[in-house]
Image (cartoon, rainbow, N blue to C red):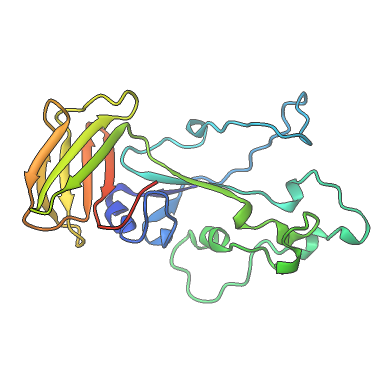
Length: 234
């Protein structure tokens, strides 16, 4: 798991939507790396489909305003699938890390080499569907998701006359949120306008400069909305 710092989110969103993973090392740092066993409940039949829940509060203490990218992966050594005869591949054939060339940037270099190494050592496209081969265990089979601890919902509409309307709601019950601080930033991360949502959760204003990002603040909660034309968020 990596954390995208609140102060770096405007830079991060220049290359990503809210669930993106481009150039993370420029804006994020590792905060947790843990192996979680699924066989502690002996009543479960792990050879059938099961549903598991992951309580992130047991792993990290979320920092308000930050975005966390959670990646759930697995290795061949964790699989229950039985490989026999020629199908079996020795675990010794999988290197834990690839050779690294160049000067280390910081003490997180080893983590980022593993994180960005999408394919296992000796990956073969022809073996990608064979669970008895290391090539089966690669990033396209992993689950990843960005999360943020916030209940702020945002909708923004801009008119042809440079007017803008922003609606701020509580995503838990869709009720309007008043008194929310709203800042609009340009692509150079300069604040071009600030305002607050009114009693109905709306903010209406005229813009002199085209914004690229809207940041909403309410106590320790944050909300982010990209405003560049043609983009969409999940």
